[in-house]
Amino acid sequence: MKKSFKLLFAALLGFAMFVPAQAETMTLTLFDVDSMLVTNGNAPITCTMVDTEGYTLQTIFPEADLAPMLNQEINSMMFYLDGATTIDGGELAISVGTTDVTAFPGWEPQPITGLTPVCTYSFTPGDTTVLITFDTPFLYEGGNLVFESKVVTATNWDEGSFIGMIADEYNVLIKRNYSSARDRFYPMTTFTYSGNAPVVNPGDVDGSGLVNVTDVTMLINAVMTSNYDAIVFANADMDGNGIVNVTDVTMLINAVISAR
Image 1 (cartoon, rainbow, N blue to C red):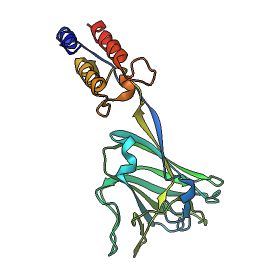
Image 2 (cartoon, one colour; image 1 turned 90 degrees about the vertical axis):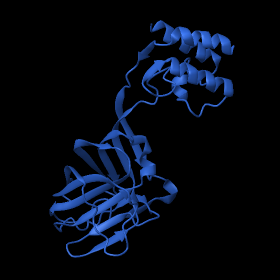
Image 3 (cartoon, rainbow, N blue to C red; image 1 turned 45 degrees about the vertical axis):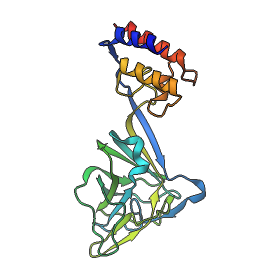
Image 4 (cartoon, rainbow, N blue to C red; image 1 turned 180 degrees about the vertical axis):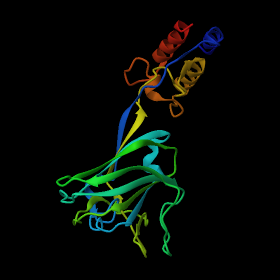
């Protein structure tokens, strides 16, 4: 069997087909575990201090939770209020960025600098969610994500708070004009980003965007050793039956040959 595969490889070398990945709008919702939900008025934006210009909040989101968005463009973030807001207008400047730190220090915590302005936000009475739509998508290339909101135009305040979870570390910075404080809170958040559909390239076993003899080699090794950790399983399942076996190997070989 191995010998016959080697002969096929020799015939296939140099031939490949390229299948472009199809980008689509994806969503990622974090910190929505029902049994752990709490409310907080300090993050990610302020309701009670929206009457104070310059009032700034920064919230750090852990890199581990953002893995599905790696190297993708974030288009929006939605937060969930604990009830409808009565705030009308005002203006918050919204910026995002990344950092290596996961928490703010206890001694004289300062805002993280070098963030990218992405949009402004104004409240609408009756809203139960806060949708932050970026004017320009933010390319997320890894790291802990920093979300900043700063009051630039004050308006009347409300006692609104956001749904989320208590964080293990002090991941929230509260910056007033002459002082700063910290808090521990992950707001329930829905990210919208431009991503790739989970199954885009049947036969692209290594996830490179190409379907060629390399994929055939990897698939044969996976089937012969019953070790599928190194392959993109959905792409290797050529017949879509949820099982990867020699039938899929045969289909992949035929696909590569037909691309000649």
